Length: 116
Image (cartoon, rainbow, N blue to C red; front, top):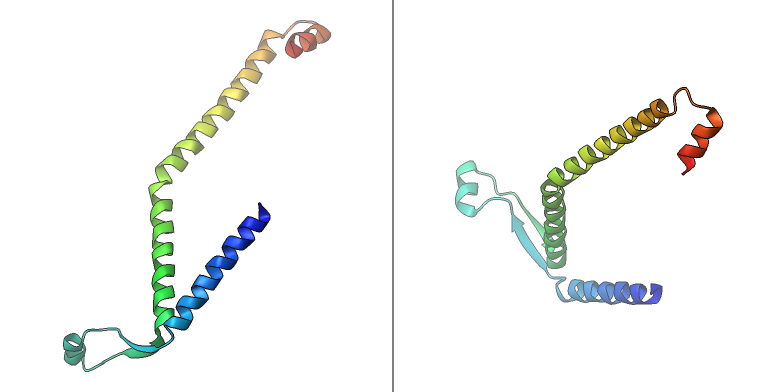
């Protein structure tokens, strides 16, 4: 199973390298459209290889998806935490009630009764 995982990682790495080599030409990335940049008299732009833009878009999409999913699952995690607190409370109550049940009995008999 480990070798299959390594093979998949190697294939994925080769695919990323191929994409990077095929798209290594430089492109101009502008922060603002030309019309708006003319109003503010600034034209922030940068020259980057195209594969960096592609990989940055993929990475940004993954991060947004992870955050979105984490926020979507908040209600499920909160419900699980409430259920865990309720289980701990009920376990304490059962332990307390067992202690009250054996109150006034011989300790050996109480231990044998708890074991069964």
